[in-house]
Structures are given as structure tokens and as C-alpha cells.
Image (cartoon, rainbow, N blue to C red; front, side):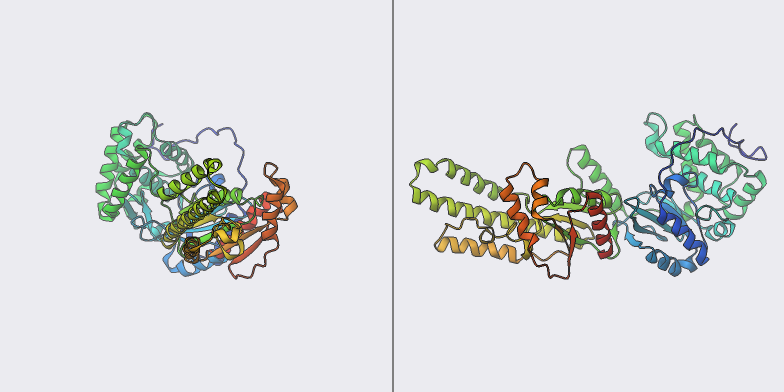
Length: 498
């Protein structure tokens, strides 16, 4: 039956699909719903009403409409539950919409709450529209599980407007329906049952006078299976004209950046990173520890945990990108070693020592350049997760040549000059905002690195095992525990520091 207003209800109940396995629910989401109900904040969840199992498990954004007068109390509630405000990239900020993030320790993912103080529909990087019906929607809200929801006629109206404005000119060349349209149809089947003709018409006439019955029927038709793409696009343009008084476009720079990113991907280049930033700013987080402590595994886990929502970069200071000079000096060192058999012993030792020392200077410069780039990323709001960050406590593992016992046979004025230059680069490295020291006893490190020489792994592990950590920015983590426990501890320490 078509989705028109000719009957008492819009559509008969659809047959139930086979039940699916439910993802584990988020205790944090349930607690948020209970606290909001207890505080008496005027709010409701206005999107995603059919995907309760999904967003209750923290797999989607929670879009909550909040009364403006409750903004301060709402922020306090979220802060009490560990939420942090996140800021959209420049140009993508939407007035009246804020984002908050908090980790759910049991599920190991970030819960994202979209706080709408204004009802804004549409993508932030394209034209979007505010519907000035917040008060009416909030007044109609009824108790749901775990959040309040709008009255059915408001839920249907919002879904139809949101779905119609999402039609894209790319549908004209796309095969089949876009994935979001199939999701919208499923949600439409959920919210339309029991919506009376009179109630829906009255809601439109009172709160959205720009629309009429014919416009609504046209919008509903575009969400039906089999609706031609040209009609969907034409109806979107019609609705945009009707609502043009409430429309907003992002700055032109947003479109330029999107075109540049698309071009970079088409050319096989890596586009510039983007993402939300925490309102408290970016940070450089250093993971330090010996071989076998699980630094790389933990860094990848932390990156995958934060990347879906935030601007994150993972770097390795022990292996910085090498400049052309570093590559040339490295090639000279290898060539000198191959020619060592035909060089005088003393001359070979001098040449090898000075070339190796020069390569250490180049490595120090590469680390300094990487440090400078990462610091700029953090200043712009990114969270930088860095392995092998040179700090005083681990200089014997990643630091100047004299601290590691490298090129000690090089002597003379040139060697002194090179060591001085190398030390200057390391002296210019600012300390990270947070140091997470993964401590593991030497024997466990040896067991975790069966392919490495035991004396080498044991000696390096003993260095940090016997280190006295005194900095206020250092958090000691027992890396001898199982990996899931170590990662959970790191997540908690990081979020607390951010």
C-alpha cells in the first residue's frame, strides 16, 4: 500500500523479520538514560528510533534533542559520566549542535552523543536546514527505553523531512538504492504504525506551514521502493525551496577541501587527516618500554579505539621518516663496511666511526623533524600516539650515540662537533604530554621475543625495569598482564589525562 494520507493510518503493520542476535548493550548508555530521567531534563532522542539495539550497544551516534534551558545541567550530567566535548573540524561546525564522547570500558569503544539544541537536518558539509519546532517536539516526548522519544507524528515528520533532504544527485548515476535509503525505509516502517491522518495533518499545519499535504505525499513517495532517482532528486529540490528560510550552507572552503581529498584519493595519495578534536585540545602521548612490552600492539589498539571519532596520528620515533641526506649517509656507511677488507685497519676504524656518528646526527635530525610535525598536529587538536619517544629515562634505547654506546671509537675535533650537534637536536625535543611506561620483567620480555637474541632483549628490558620514574607526566603500566587488561588500563589512563 502506498504511503499516502488517504487512510486512517499510513500503512498496515509489516511482517516481522527473523530475529537477529543482539549486540551487547552499553551500560554507559543505560546509565545516561537513567540519569537524564532522574534529573528532569527536557529532552528526547529524535533519530535512530528503529535501531535501538545498535545505538544501545554504542555502535551509532546518540542524537538527543535538549532544551536550551537545560544546557548547563546536561553538560554537568555528561561530565559526571566521563564525557568530553569534541569539536568538529573547521567549517563543519553546526550552530546548536555539540558532540560528546566517553569510553565504555566493557565494550572497548567510544560512545558518541550528539546534543542538538536546535533541530538541524542535513549533512554538515552540505546545505543543512533547521526545523524550528524544538519546543513542540520536546513537549510531545514520552518515556522510552532508555531515552524519551517524540510522539509518533513528530517522529514520522522528522524522518520524512530528513530522508527527503538526503537524496543526492549522485543517485542519478548510481546503480540501485543507496544504503542509507534502505536504512531509512526500515526506520519508516517502525515509526509510521498508528500515526493517524488527522494528527499528522494537524502537526504539519501548526508547526511546518511551509509544507502541505501534496508536498508530504511527494516526500513519502520518494522513500518507497521503486521510486525513480530523478523524482527523488526533484522532490528534494522542492522541499529545499519550501524550507529555504531555515537553510544554511557551510563555508566554501569546506567544498574545496572535500574536492582536494577526493582528488588525492583518486590519484592514490594519502589525503590529509581530519576528524573531531577534543575541546580540551590535542596531546602527544608517548608509549615507552623495552622489546616485548607490547608497545606496537597497544599503539595500534589505541589508534583503532580513537580513530573512528577523533583526529589521531600514530608515529614511531625510533624509525622516523628518513631524509635524502640520511639515506645517502646510510649508503656510505654500508659501502665503507664492504670496503673494510681492503682499507688499513686504523683508517677503517676512523672512517667507520665518523660515518656512523654522522648517520646518528642525521637520525637525530630526522627525529627532530618528526617531533616538530607531531607537535604541530597536537597544537591543531590531534591526539598523537608515539612509540619510542626519546625521554631521559630511555635514552639508552633511543637517544644520542654516546648514551647507546655507538661510535665510541670516533675521536678528535670532528667527532666532538658531531656529538655536540647530535645532542642539540635531542635537547630541542620537548617532553610529551603523557608518558605511558610499559614495564615488563626481563624474563617475560625474552619469552615474548623468541626470534631475538636473549642477551640483547634481556639487557634492554633490564634498563627500563631498573629505571627510577619521577616525572609527574609518567604513568607506570604493568605490561606483564594479559593484553586486554593492559589495553584497558591504557585507555583509562589516556581518557583521564585528556
